[in-house]
Amino acid sequence: MKQVYMDTLGCQMNVADSDRMELLLFHFGYSRTPHMEDADLILVNTCSIREKAEQKIFSLFGGIKSLKEANPGLVMGLTGCLAQQDGERLLKRIPCLDFILGPDHVEDIPLAVDRVLETKKPLVWNDFDNKKNYSIPPVTGQGRTNSHPSAFVNIIKGCDKFCSFCVVPFTRGREKSREANEIYDEVRAQVEQGAKEIILLGQNVNAYGKRGLKTPVAFHQLLYGIARIPGVKRLRFTTSYPGDVTQEMLAAYADIDILVNHLHLPAQSGNNRVLEAMRRGNTVEEYLALIETLKTRTPDIELSTDIIVGFPGETDREFEDTLRFMEQVEFSSSYMFCYSPRPGTPAAEFQDDVPEPVKKERLQRTIECQNRLTAMRGEKFLGKEVDVLIEGEINRQGTTLMKGRTPHYWQTHFPGTANRFQPGDFVKVRVEKVAGHALKGQAVVQ
Ligand code: SAH
Ligand code: F3S
Image: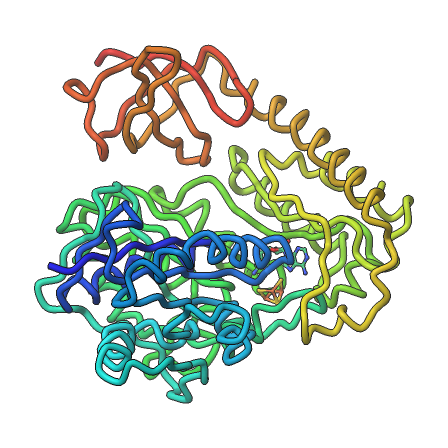
């Protein structure tokens, strides 16, 4: 078999796309290697959400172009959002590239490799597919590409929200949902192959079913449908958009046992003027009301969010509102970013007027605030038993620890070895300590 080396940057959608490409390439005669030097094909699945993500890609290719010089038969491809955004221009910037595929061309990866090998000419496929439906057909003899107990299942792609700072609607195109029956079939197949937890994926999961489905199914109905499939032990989804949260979706948290008590709900800012300039489509008050309803119905819910600091025009006072807001909601974790202008987005036209050192300082204060909140939320679990789905083991200072996650998405570590615990096992752990974003404790002998 030939060998493919893959590097994946960015979000979980990219991880899922890479898994899919690995599977398609496997049926095309390529097995995955962790060693770049052994590869016949190198793929970099890129991200362009922030400037930093983009810079990483150029330095990565700087490092690997010598491999191509040493082995002219090596094929190199770039996929993902940067491919969509920059297309042809990338061939000039990275001359060692053989092909560039946008995210709508994941299914074409074997065809692209074949074409390059045959014609020896670079190719760029980054048009959006104009089919109405989104389908990921099963592959015959499909096997899981890894033994992780959690399986990603794409339910919707694209985003129609056009927040002023965000490149996703331009790189991933319009929102399109997959037919529910196709999703149920994939979930059943994943469970048969050992998955215990299903993670529904989309840039905007809870916009699922809004239009375009032959058999209309709303997002909350999809959740109930998946929860009825035997063998699904946990159900999660990410990322949801506050403006698409429905009362029925909130009710599902209280109704569906296997739906985890964790919601990732990006807020971006705690100030209404900034939210409006970001075109987020909701106010702080609406956000807080939604959280209040959820907390009343599901008191042990844990929340996480995304925050951007230093958006154009953000004043010190407006930034302080974000800190206050984070404290009010008590997020258990956050992804926190300095704003960077993205090409083609409306905010790129605004003056990026918050100086870099001020952005950095605000980011630092946001991180400190979140660390305090994380410690506070973690302390609630001290002395309690949590349900951990084991993912694998880690070694810390010579001791082997098992690692896994609670339904609340807390990473948990406890002493144990692989001959006693297997990935995919559920174990009760009594929490003794909170260390950063992890809970530490002992397995409860049953
Ligand atoms: N669908 C999600 C967003 C996905 S993009 C939602 O509902 O908001 C992932 C995160 O990247 C965003 O939530 C945002 O916090 C961050 N991000 C996006 N564009 C950015 C930019 N130009 N600068 C800094 N952070 C950005
Ligand atoms: Fe981006 Fe806003 Fe969609 S942040 S992914 S345009 S919801």
